[in-house]
Image (cartoon, rainbow, N blue to C red; front, side, top):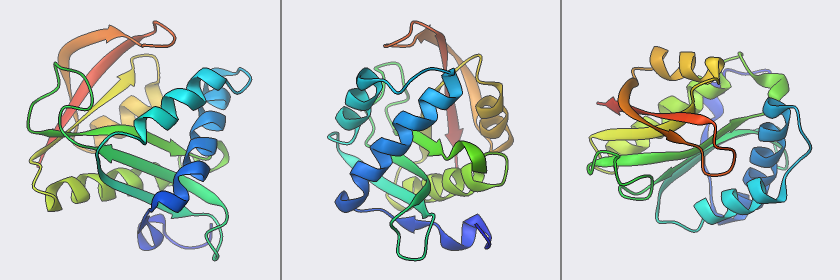
Length: 167
């Protein structure tokens, strides 16, 4: 990636969904130090079937064939019932592991929040594993605040916390 991530973030389409699911599955496997999981892939595919506010992505090649990262923002009410009713839900955000800590996640997160605002949603909610320190730092540095809502992750049971950003 030779240009600034923020300068090349673009809106994704249905044609990008398969590549996003592939990236999510491989990024989760790399984060957790395990083999790619069919359960993780199926859960990601399910999230892409919910009402979408925006899909933003960072192509990894000029022709868009490769993908460096993406963020999926879904409609209020598609996260957990405890999420703020007016908050769009940042359902998935993934960055190629070899590009983490280079501004890609921040650029995607900024674009997702901007897309929520443009769509009339005054807040964005997300859920993050409490032991994912890198992600927690990114979200907090981007203006997201932890709520008192914690719950076990649906697939792993790992403690997970809700964070909210208000424009």
